[in-house]
Length: 162
Image 1: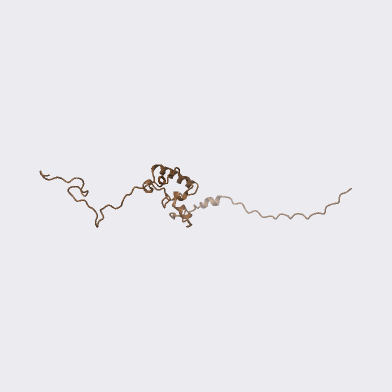
Image 2 (image 1 turned 45 degrees about the vertical axis):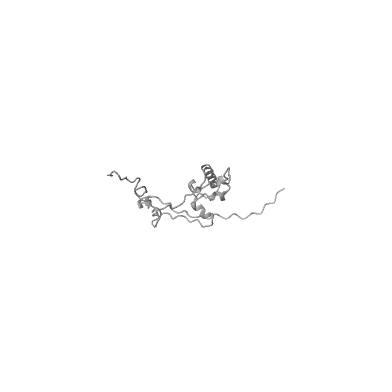
């Protein structure tokens, strides 16, 4: 219900507008938290035509600490170079120049590989054969071991007859 001389405030509550003062900054923080600067593609700045998969030092900057390829919004590369970058990283991974996972990163810097603990499961118990079936099977008696005769002594060779 508005009367003739009053106006309703626009927008949602807390968004500012004629009815409410806009909240700037203060102890609660409500102001602008970060400055979003436009990133420039480092490959475009260097005028790179093709991204080489053998340049693993440069490609490593575009991998996260978990060895994942950084997205465009984070790395600042343009669309064209991001596609080329992904292809180069995948080729370098295939040739073992770059890691696939974070476990590979740890082993490449000299830290020992530590396997993740596996959930402990109860060991399967061997199934015992029923006693009746074991007793029913015939058991062959052990065979005596006979020692082989030693080789006969060498006979002197007979002289050839003429």
